Image (cartoon, rainbow, N blue to C red):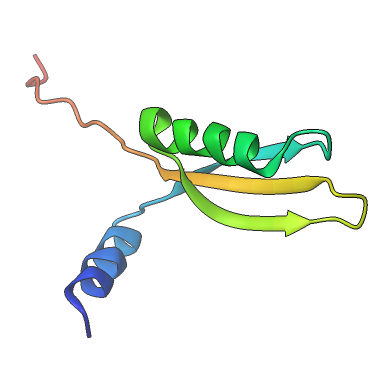
Length: 78
């Protein structure tokens, strides 16, 4: 088992979740422009590509995902 797989299973066992964002790209947008938009979302929004569907008319639907990070309070209850 790879180390990355082990840490992912631990993360999921501890309640790790993803949030998803669905982006619809019309056929009028070129492939390079769509790639640029998705690259910016990945770099600045910490999104990663989860799934892509290309429809007959040329429309693309892209699912992006990122880990939900839950912050625990370090303040003591008073």
